Length: 223
Image (tube, rainbow, N blue to C red):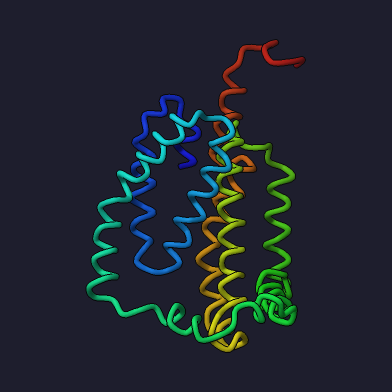
């Protein structure tokens, strides 16, 4: 979808591919959540600058890629797969009390902070490397809508995971301890992708340097 935003022709092939790729991740419930998050982010970014007609055209292209996998998934869910344990157990526990319990939010925040805040030299070094690259590298090429789409999808997906933990029917401490590392690891590629949407990638810097070196003297500023 980011490639579609950056393309000049807007033919729609990349949106079909995005729908197909999204469908491939829908074999689990988190894939369905990602689909919902992606559609919300796409609406928020594209609807402001697109007409209703163009917006619906893009949705149809996404759906055309998604449909083949979606049909198989619906058949599997209805005919073969057992009911989700989260869905089955959630109905037996009061959700309002969980949503209003500040201790659940504090426990989730504590577990997440323990994993993303550096606690050793390796972690601090990694954060400093990211900050150093961002400070030295210029911003990426013009792709504001792509940055907005990627960052909003990342944020909404993270908040979706938080919401699942808040209302989980399992003991919260156990659920966090047995899944939070996997959840954060699954979000890591998206973080790296959004990071390099914001800052220039190494190949962009090399290409820019090569183009600047090919300019004749006196072009592009004082020598």
